[in-house]
Length: 110
Length: 517
Image (cartoon, rainbow over all chains, first blue to last red; front, side, top):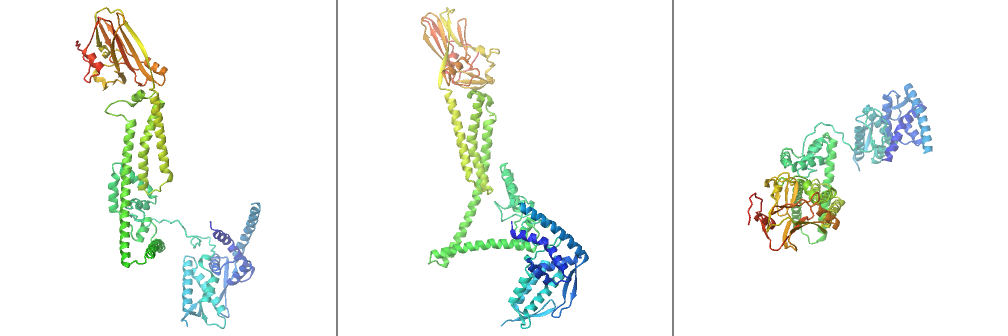
């Protein structure tokens, strides 16, 4: 049994929820901001994790992006959550609440 | 001073140290191949590159012009390595990252060919190769081969044919084809890596050996090394030949073992065609009851079989390269000792049954006989049917010896002794002693009483039975002794046949002619 593996599995499960949540809390978010916010919340990922995930969420219709011109450098993508994405996020949050309660209950008894 | 390269990263131009550029290039290639299978991979790569460019820009700031190794390292740390990407993809078709390489090969039966496996062979790798083709453990095929060898050695011929026909898997791709793995670059890489590791270890060991030799003898010449290497190789060669011979001997031993085993089983439980005696009858004669007989057969059987089994098992273990068990020899030996003890026990029991003897006496006083001469002859009437002896003619007699005949499933004993004495009165009298042995006087006496033997006086002839029967008892040296008391002044005449009989002459046989002397 590989503890790192198990830990990674746990984290994987909540990444989508977190990222959607972060993007939804702002109007538009830039990937490196997302990273920063996750670091602030003590949820560490490398940037490389983000990009495939963002790409997938966008293709799934949960996110959308704008190109914003930058003074110093190439245009950046700014992401925001679509309506579908908002509904998705709500459901995920609800599930998370339930899970969180369940886990608390179980691990208390254990 | 370093050489710099101009690179276009995410649409921006950078001056990078050459070595930093190589590193960055490799990193990007790694990412590219990681994302290759993902949908939208170009987009992802573009995003990542753009982000890298941004990061580099920040690091350059206004002051610096050249991207160096440190900057590249920083970027790589920030972006992460593919192993660290916690990809939450739930859709099939997206590449899953797992921290362990999948152990089980997914066999696609594309490109599966039959080869001999030279890496896992006992003789020629035939069984191993065929087993690889069917994805089974080679031991089953080897077992079948050994069995087929024993059954008139048919297996040997087949094996040799297969050995010649099927090629050995020499190249890596052939080995993969033998196992049925897809011949992909990764598989070949893996296979080659395994072999290289093996080789590397062997070379290391060899190097250690050489070093040891060198250290041990400072005056070691290079020439000596060469010769020593030659002899070492020669030695290895001889050793492998010897191993082969040992395996061959093991096969022979196994075969011999099986042959002995079968003969022993036949001997113990089968019918010996030469004598047409049924074993139940023999064991009835020897053993007091069935329990004893069973025990005796069991212990003797085990005594014979256990060593043979041991030979077979050891032979097969050597042949099939099964690991030796510490307890194997011990358990076989102790089982054999137990069998030995049991055999001795039965033997002692039987011997015990012979220790006491007793006799029963019958007295015949021939008061009605008033003649001067008494003739003694063998009672031939017992050869007639209805006499109770159930012997019809000599041809029914299967065993003919001094002491007993066996005919018609019955035992007829001839252990009869005869002597004469002077009578104390004027009558002929005959004392017949029936004697037997047993484990106690009482038992011996009972046995003696079960002896069936008759004499009959007919006119002036005393007819003596040539056989007695012992009833349902086992044979415990039952015999008959007779003492004939002859009064003075009377004569006694014995037929030649009776004389022969009593002297147990070899050419004694019953004829129906009376000859008198």
